[in-house]
Length: 161
Image (cartoon, rainbow, N blue to C red; front, side, top):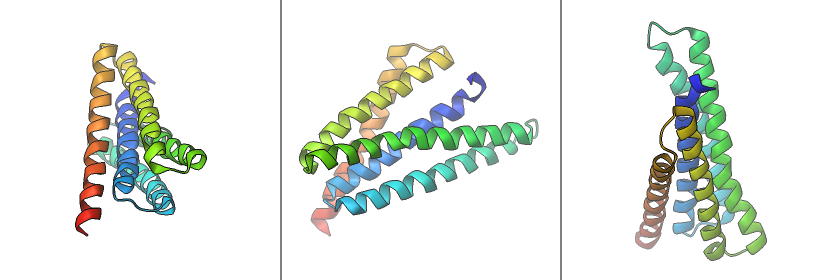
């Protein structure tokens, strides 16, 4: 697993961040739950495939790397993206299904996503032998800033369009 730490962390971080950014932007833009579901799952699968293919192509561009190593990096990225990316989408959908109020469901999902980001930071720290606190804070910061930006864009576009 240590040989794929970069692919796991990169895929997982991008999966959480981009998927939650889609949810955050959609909630900020006040779109319907069906649109959030469609955009969320479309992003999850298409971006996950793109990330995995990108990892594969990136590794194959290095002449010293084998095709099997490239394929393993692509698969690790795809799986990590989808496993971690499902967390924010699932958190929002499950929370909203029980609460039926975006104004309450979204903040709860925001906290759940924070736990997932912290978990990924912890995984990164342990696999790369870095400081746990530093990696958790970095991961949380990047994830939450992206979600706040997406939410703000959703609000602005909804207001001006």
